[in-house]
Image (cartoon, rainbow, N blue to C red; front, side, top):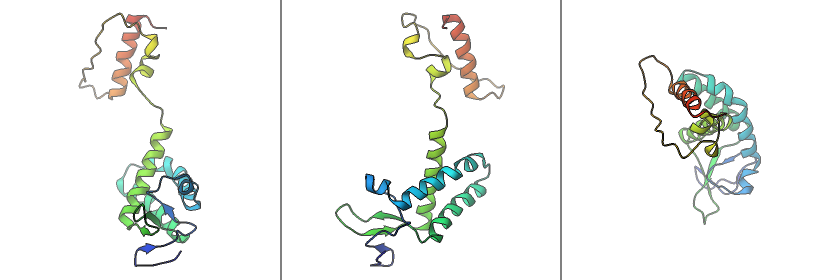
Length: 161
């Protein structure tokens, strides 16, 4: 890692995480691979953590692990430049939090209307013009369960198997 300015480097270090470069080379970079593994290992704990303070502690532990190994979060200064800028702690924390949320979203099952209704688009009779509407009640039920209940009643009336 060659330093040029206070927060600029010429060459990424072995454990640096390259953030704004979407090339195969940066994807396979050692620091980026280690970062993805750390995010994957912490994603479940992050998801089940209720307080913002505890989520911040998880984010900081990932950042401290990277920095403890001699790595930083970096990005290319400009596309035509070979200089890399070291991100601030706040920017690095934001990147880590975003990566954790993306990992959680990637693991959760996709819930669209057709999967709730129990089929795909082609399994529904398109000739019937039936309007689906959702009236949110005061029972405290989540929207998902209310939609699921509506889907069950619709499935029965459409006789979808």
